[in-house]
Every structure is written in C-alpha cells, then in structure tokens.
Image 1 (cartoon, chains in turn yellow, brown):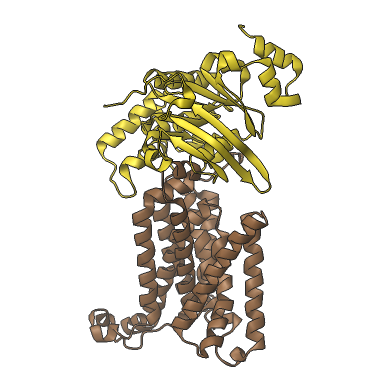
Image 2 (image 1 turned 30 degrees about the horizontal axis):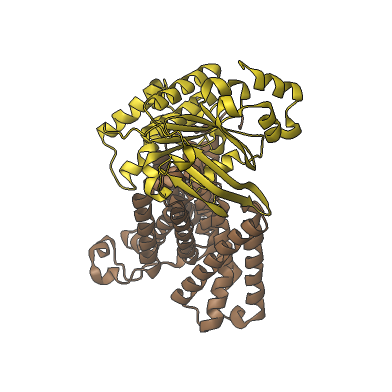
Length: 265
Length: 307
C-alpha cells in the first residue's frame, strides 16, 4: 500500500500542510458559544489529547472540524485543504454513547461502514472488502465477534468495533471522541496499542481525553480548552499547574492539580 | 365464492390494501429506528386540512387536486415540525404532537365552516377510507387479469398505489447503504460524506407520499398502523436490518390479506350479519401481529434492561 509519510514539522504555525489547522473557530448553541474563537494546529505523526472540563467544547470542536456541527465563524484546514477535498484521509470515532446499540446490525456490517468512501452508495461489497474488514477487526482483537449483533457486546467491545471501523477508513488523521470512556482496562490497553501503532506509521491521532493521570503516558501533545483555547504544545511543557488552573478553574481540587502537574517532573 | 366474484370484488381491494401496507411499512422501518415513527401519524392527520383547502380552491372532489393539497399540507407540517423543534428547542415528538393535532383541528373547523359538508368529504372517510368500494366492474373472471381492455377498468387507486410502492422500493435500493449508516450513526455518516440531509429529507417526503396515496384509498388508520406495527414486529424477529425489512413486508402483507378476509367474512362466521370495516380490521390484525411478536419473537429484548 502506498502512503505518503508526513514530514515532521516542528514549527507548527508555519506548516501549511498540517494534518489539522483550526483558526478562529466559533460554534454556538443558542446564545452561548460552546467553542469561542479557538486556534489549534496538530503536528503530523503525533498523538494529541484534547483536554478540558465537562462542557468545555471538546466534542463540539471535533464535530465542527468534521462539519457535523456548523461553525459560526472560523477556518478549518485538513492537510492544507478544505475538508471536502480530504474526507478520505480523515477517520472519526464518535462517542460510544452517541448511537443506539440496539440497532439491528452485526459487528462486521459496522466495520464495513468504514469503507463508505470506497464503496459509495451503490458499490458492491466483494470478498477483498470482507477480508479487509475482518483484518481490521483482528487488529482490535474482535475477529471472533464478526457475526454478533452489536447490542450483545460489552462497552469495551463496542468501542473496539468503532475503532475497527475507523481503521477500515485507512486514514491519515484519526479523530477520536473519548475512546476510553467506560471501557475495561484490557480494552484501554488494546486501544492505546492500536493508536501508537498508527502513530508509528506516521499517522496523526487526536483524542478527546478525560483521564489526566494517563495523559503523559499516552500523548505527545495536548490542547487545553475551556470554551476558549488555554494552551497547546508538548505535554511536558504545557501540562503545568498554572495551565491546569486556567483550564479547570475551581473544578479540580488544588491538591489534584499539584499532584498531576508534578508527576515525573 | 366464484372466480368472477373474487376477481371483481375482493382481489382489487386486497391488492390495494397489500400495496398500501407495504408502501407504508418499508419507510416505517427507518422511521421507527430513527425514533420518528410519529411522523407517519402526523402526516396522516395533516392531510385533512390540505384536502379541504384543495376543495375550496378547485370546488371539486377529484383525486389530483386533493393529492396535491394533501402533499402540500404534509410538506408544511414537516417544515413546521422542524421549525418548532429548532426555534423552540422542543423534543421532536412533542413538536409533531403540537403540529398534527393543530392542523387536524384546523381541518375540521374548515370542513364545518364551508360547504364541504354537503359533498362526500367527511371525517369518517378520512379515517376509514373506502377500501371495500374499490371494485373492478370490468372483470369477468380470472381471465380478465390478462385482458388489456378489462385491465383498463381497474380502480385508479391500484395503479397509483403500485407506482408509489415502486418509487419507495427504488429509493431504498439506491440509498440503502447511506440510509443504514446514517440511521445507525448520523455523526459518522456526516464525517464520511454520506448525504445525510438529502436521505433524511427524501425518507420523510416518501413517507408523506405513501401516507397521502394510502390515505385516499384506505384511510389514515391503516397508514398509522402500517408505519409502525409491521416494522416494530419485524425488529423482534431478527437482529439484521436486511432481514427485518423483509419480515416487515411479510407482516404488512399478512395484515392486509388476513384483515380484509376477516372483515368481510369474520362477522358472518360468528353469527353476525354485517361485514366490518376492512381498514379497521387490517390495522387490528397488524396490532395483533405485533403483540404475538412481542411475546414470542426470538429477538425481543426479554430480560435485558434498557440502557
């Protein structure tokens, strides 16, 4: 398979072909903005966490980037172009709770959904598509469940199926909305391993993340957001007491902030 | 019963009933899965003011002006529901409830305040339709099914219902993958570029088309029942959407045929003299099918607690 490996650009603001560049993005539900005039730039081949308190606009940011929510203002560039030109290079894993898992469909059918760009509305699913979808399932350790109805799976298994669908998209930019929410420890390890594998292949991974204690282990960069942008950059530089206080305000206990920001210095 | 009687008196209403049931049940599968099942109910109520307005404008009770009026009212109601949902931030079910009761009530007022009460346009007709009257006078027996001259005398409702059913089947075939992905996971569907708005819009428009066409032939009771009962029963029979849709077509057909036969002959079998409304009986049978599926269906949720 031919792939273009993105160059490792260090000067993020100047990189015209950054996997994701967001400028002045504002999204509003009713009167109150959920995301206000936010700038972020993702660096190629790195894992970035989007971190902030509940209601800080993390999910909304992802949805606006993907055109699922309509932005009031701002610009989003994906690999230097408009999203409509780059959809085939972007994969999205929504929050698991955002769909009805009683939907009458099997695991393999959900994964085949990741081939929509290739199949279109009318393309026939052929054997190599099936084999590819099965391969994606085995990468998340779910190959034995392909014929199951999705409602019969545990939360962690459902999350792995969502990840397998994103793998089937064979994208260069992966956007995941809280993939570790409500999953078991084994699933969390499996997902982290898959995401690190994507990174090793030069792909860019952006994750809405809640668990501050694993931030240093999993991610290279972090975007701190609380409706507005608080900070962005390498975890080691940005994940500081002052920035956490600015992001969470009174919502994290001072002792918590102290402990998190001091972890392994 | 002789072949002549059956072909002339029973076959056309039965076929029309089956086509109407299938035309409503097919989109109903997706409406139920999208938690929009009430939209069928809404549409079948709002066609009343549409029909009355069409009569006031044209002064006649003929099919096409009434169909156009009903279709226009259906579109107005869909727009109103969306507007109320977005502007007032009210849940979709409540918005539908407000719109369809208000428009139905408006239709009744219009009906009372105008001359329409002097012609055959009444609330009863709107509810029950006139399935039993859709007979085929040109039929002389089974042979008429291959006789072009006799076929030209078929009730026009039959052709209309058949065309609508074909349009709906074509829509499902063309948009199947997009419908399935966007019904299961709308956010993901948008992210990969599925035309979510177009598909959702077409689904509602075609549901309205099915409701309006079926309404004219068989009344709104069947429409409401067929949008919901066969798909809901079918969901309990399988865990795969493809198979669910097939079951829903089977259940719709079963309800229409069994309902028609039971309405015509059931009362005689148990000693009553008059047949009952076929539309009412078809809806009742579909409800019974759902009840049986809910008790014995292999894929009902059973003891599982809702999430």
